[in-house]
Image 1 (cartoon, one colour):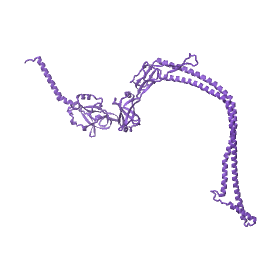
Image 2 (cartoon, one colour):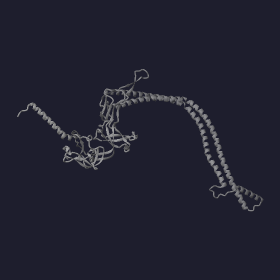
Image 3 (cartoon, one colour):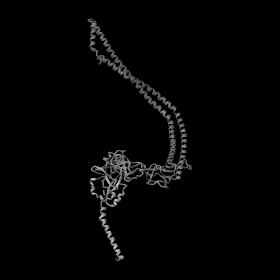
Image 4 (cartoon, one colour):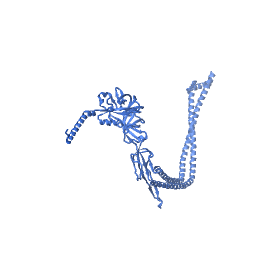
Length: 601
C-alpha cells in the first residue's frame, strides 16, 4: 500500500475536522437547540413556618430620624478687678479661658451607645478654666462678705436716725389724736341718739296705724267680727237728745227704755271718744319723735361742720410737725434700698459664679471626657482634635434609635379604621425576613391631598423593637407598613407563591419518596401579599416547592442556585397565586424535563 505524503495527511485531517464540525452543528440544531428553546420548569424549596400572620392595609414610606444633640453652651467668662489702680472705682476687665479638644472618639455615621465616650478635652485647658472659676468664686465670696458687713452697719445708723426723728414728732401726734377724738366722740353720741329715735319711728307709726284701724273696726266692724252690730251714731245722737227732751218735759212713760237708751249712748260715745283720743295720742308721740330727730340732726350738722374745721386745723399742725419725720423716713428708705441693692448685686454675682462652676463641673466631669447621653447613629461631629471652644456650638448630633418614625399618606377610607396607639407591622425592603413593630403616634386631621380622586391624611408611625435590631436601620430606608385588620397567632404559614388553586381547592408541590414533584391538597386561611395561612395538610418545618418556568439552560442554572429568596424569581403565579384551570398538564413536555427536576413523571 502506498504511503500518503505529509501534505496529503494534513489535507485529509482538515477535511475530517470540517466534517466533524458540520456533524456537530447539525446535531446541535436538530437535537439540542429545540430543547434549549423550550420553557423549562424549576422548583424552588421553601419551608412551612409557625408564627403570627397579619392581614391589613399596606402603605409604603421611608424611615426618618429625630435628631438629638450634645451641645456646648458654657459661659466661662468672669470679671476681675484691677487692684493696682489707685482710683476709687476699680477698673474691671473680662477674663476668659477656653476648653481645648484633645481627641474626638466618634465620627459621622458611627453608632454610639449611651455612656460611650465622645470627646476629650486637654487636661491643661480643663485645669486653667477650673482655676479661673475658683479664683472668681473666692473674690465673689469676699465681695459679698464686705457688702453684707457694710449693709448691716449702715442699716443700724439709718435706723438710729429714723428713731430719733420719730420720737421728736410723737407729741404732735398725741395732740392731734386728742383734738380729733373729742370731736368724734360728740358726733358719735349725736349719731347714736338719732339712730335710737329713728328706730322708734317705725313703732310709733305702727301705733298710729293700729289706733286708726281700731277706730275703723269700731265704726264698721272687722272682717273677722261676725257679731258686729252697726250703729248709726247720728241717729243714736238724735234718739239721745229726744229722750233727754222727754225727760225734761216729764213725758217719759217707759223708764226701762229710757235707762237702756242712756246707757247705750254713754257706752258707745265713751268708746268713740276714747278711740279718737288714742289716735290723737299716737299721732302726737310720733310727731314729738320726729321733732327730736330733726333737732338732733341739726346739732349733728353743726358738730360735723365744726369737726371739719377743727380737724383741718389739727391736721395742718400735725403735718407741719411731721415734716422732719417724713424727711427722715424718706432718707431711711432710700438708704436701705441702696444698701439692699448693693448686697443683692454681690449675692447675685456670687450665685452666678457658683452656677458657672456647677455647670462646668457637670459638663467636663472628673476626667474631662464628654459621654453620650443616648444611643443612636451620629449625623454630625462639630469639633476635631486641636479645636478651641470659644463659643456655643454642637459637639455631636445623633439620631436616637428611640426616635425613628415613618410618615405615610393614608386614604380617607383606610384612615377611619386607624387609632393613635394601634400596633402595626413594619417590613423594611433591606431586611425582607424581619418584621418590626410600629405604633401609630399621630394622625393628621387635615387632608394632605384634596384631589377629586384621592383624599389622604398623614399618619406617623413610631418604630420599636430590640436595640440590636433598631441599630441596623438607617434614615431613608423604605418600608411597607401593615395596618393590621385581622391576625392569626401561633399558626402555620407559607409563601403565597407556593400555593396553587383549582376548582376552589388549594395545593402545594411536595417531593415524593420517588423523587418526583406532586401536588398535595391543603386547607388555607388568612393571606397577605407575602404569605398564606395553612390550616391543615402540612406541619411546621415541612418543605414545599415553588414552581416556575425558565426559557434557557443558563436561566435554569441561575434559578436553581437562587434558593435564598423567592421574591426575585420570575414565577407563573400572578402575585403568588397559580390557577391550574389556566394550565394544561398535557401541554407540558414532561420528557423534555431533566430527571432531577421531575422529568418523565
